[in-house]
Image 1 (cartoon, rainbow, N blue to C red):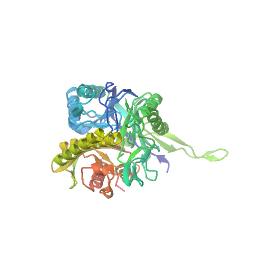
Image 2: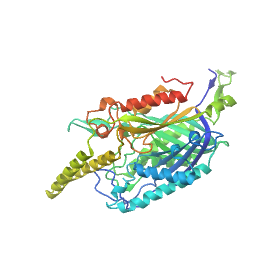
Image 3: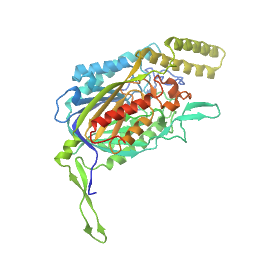
Image 4: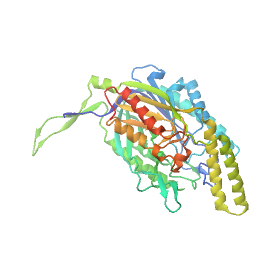
Length: 486
């Protein structure tokens, strides 16, 4: 072997970033166990990024472009996502089918949905959400204006920030959502460096699977969690914006998490940031490959290599483009509770919570308050579910040597591990929570009925994750004609 190729994409690319930090005092209670309602300050600002990919030398059309909006939020309701998409279409002229909205999934930004408007700090939610839609639309228009020809180079790194988070508590005989020392967690960090024709870095992308749950119920500050410090570190080193993409992290979270100390979130972020920077520093120059130079007689006979420019044919391969947007129908689980049952159970919990308060049992009252919140979220999910089967939204777009995959909800890590195993050597960027929570969690079939949190709140039937993996495999195979799934 005298040539080594590096995975690369050639396309048009535009990016714009902006601040979407909510006002201090806004409703903030994301955690059922939290005792506060309002935020009391800001740890780090929240960021929105508009990232536009377009086929090289192509004009704007649904088939030739993909706009990716990345928001520092846990989730937004579908109605808010629809408002953002409509605002983008009006201001930037990008059709809705070309837009996907992603969430970093920080749990420290607050639960900003309109049905919380009557709660303390909730009066600030409507105006804030309107400002987010306006800001994101402006960013999308700027991303269009910033379009330029680029090369995207990819590299893999590793970081053990993330840990398996399905733990069986032997003492209380129940599953809890927490660090499982014996569990397996995907440690892959997939990084992308975007450079322009002059070789300057335009942006970087970090794709990593780990719940941003460093900060939990004791935290009262608005925060992007660990992605904030990670971005700061990389942006300082590259002098270019860094976009974080949350991977398939349904069963993965930080080893050191569920704390109120924002310093731990920064520590976690720096850990990921240094891992990503290490991989970025090892990338070769854009549009080059490594070529063996031949033997050189010295104290030993040396075999040096050198970087050489890509030939035109190889550059054309790096510019290959395709988009595939589909709704994958997933069956609901047969034991899914009805809306009436959920409301009745919530009412019973509220009565028990009040009784505990009247009896002076503060701990029992706090636990029941958290369970009331859990039922509120179940009710919200049930109200939003389409009839018959869930139309699970997915996007697969190929840019040269890489495939970008965006899916709704929170699949377990096996989704990305399996796709990358089946397509060895192909950078497969996996983005979850694409256009919202949707069908919530997608655990493996064997976990159904065990009482694990993610399984208990899943709305689709056992086998849905496996069906989705096979569906995506077939579509990735179709867009990579010279690659067969392994």
